[in-house]
Image (cartoon, rainbow, N blue to C red; front, side, top):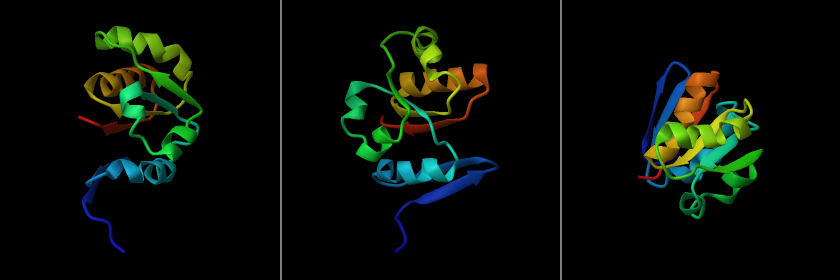
Length: 113
């Protein structure tokens, strides 16, 4: 059965648009070869995450409030070179992108806002 929504691929990047696409995230993350990931999020966003997304993470990190540079610095060491999955709003996703850019890591983003 075909899923509603659509996907767009740009080289290695996959962008998936669909209602409740977060439910597809664990499958898409695995297909993109992001196993052993660090999940960056907030307590609020984790409350609505599929259990398999949280269980699949090697480490779950709470991105603190505050400016993005400080938020990224607070969790960067714990990421420890792992690929990242960012689940949350702008601060969480921007922190993950900043770490990915500086450390040359892969990053998947699941926006909640």
